[in-house]
Length: 136
Length: 79
Image (cartoon, rainbow over all chains, first blue to last red; front, top):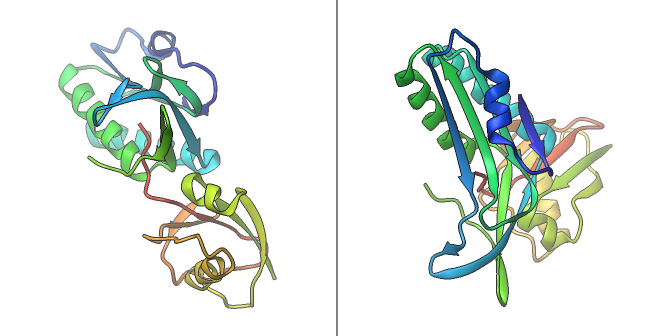
């Protein structure tokens, strides 16, 4: 349920895997590679990760949102390597009996991923490239 | 004693590889190892110093032991 992978992500399949009849709400967040960044036309992103640690941190975030919001199921997949504009780099799926908790837990998980999971992205545009500095 | 060092993203590119084996003295800290690396690779600046010891975040005063895996992590930008 917590994976760092070089393969294309499959949000619907992942959501389908964790939902069951006790869940009144399944929230799926997809992070998509934007074609424009600060006015520059992005060609693609290159993600690097410390995979063993990153998967552990994704699990920690999953455990945290389960206990804090009482959500029942969590799945988080992050893609690494080259990811093209328009492709999905991150999928977070949260399933719970009620929507309020699922929305809140999913939003928190995405914010937390950006803070504590050792993953980095490099933007590649025509004529240059740069590792992205974190911002909120 | 020997420790394994792992570098990622911009740090990896500055050094030219993602894994190094370093010889350190008994009782050496993560901070001391970072200084050594910055001295050996003058283009490398491990700032802000974010480090993991065997996949757990640690402070710069954490002590190293034989066979440890130390990772120096640039500020993260996943998502």
